[in-house]
Length: 98
Image (cartoon, rainbow, N blue to C red; front, top):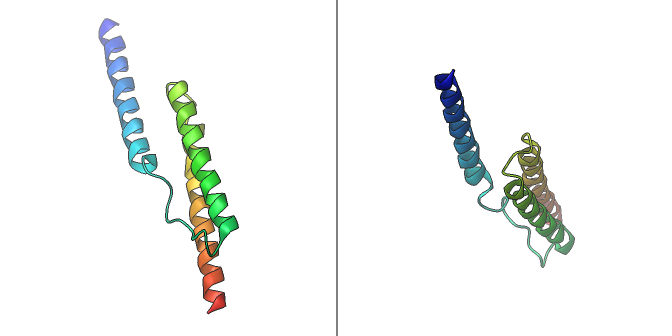
């Protein structure tokens, strides 16, 4: 029994380490490419708000020892996708103006 408990603790520690490593690799930097504030001020502002939301989620994860059943990490993934979609919207506008 004692051996099983210590194995479980090791497995939990390994899993936490993997999750943290992936989190740092994926979210250690801000989301993708920024939109030009001069050309698209509203889109750029939306991206800045997403950056703020990602930062707040990271703070919430830290405050809760990353024990949020993966929901905060998933929210950050979706916010990163939204950030990138905003960039694509700006590129689409730029292409139509040519």
